[in-house]
Image (cartoon, rainbow, N blue to C red):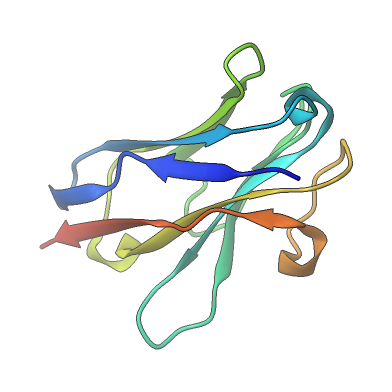
Length: 124
């Protein structure tokens, strides 16, 4: 069983930055890929970024590529999402998710554990 707790959300002006953190419980963190998803009001949850268990492999949604960076610290059982040049359309609840394998996927169904989410609001 893996528990995930996100933090770092908040209100920021367009063009600003935020860093989200996701703390994971359990001894298997360094053996599993992690991902970030987001869900805006009235929309489906969508993929944002993913990182392999070692951190060597990352992949981003086109809408955030070049602005967001996913990283992980396996010693701290934590995955991060650095968000720069934020836009109002980035406003959403951001969810951290964990797989049960080392490799990444963009499919929501490929993740077995989910956090409760953290709200990010970008004002224009």
